[in-house]
Image (cartoon, rainbow, N blue to C red; front, side, top):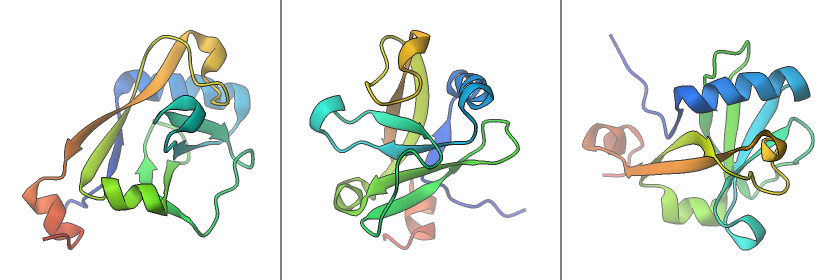
Length: 127
């Protein structure tokens, strides 16, 4: 059995919120904010409301139990700092980021991070 290394994951709580938000807004995507207005919050948008460009990196996809996986992006310059990190998107009580779709729900997305382990580092050719 082969496992594929991933840079992103989602908690059950966040996956449930994503299913609710998808029912309301349609297909979604994330862009990991690099600062400015909302700190480093993961920003969740309906597809087409945030346009990624050549300076964005697709970190991977998360399976929230929907028909389609949800893509997670980050700017290339921020990725240079975070390339050794695995990100897990979670949801907790609180006010969401101003432009992120969870804002009115009373919950907010946040990132939990850890360093990539040796197998992941090897899979991403970072050793």
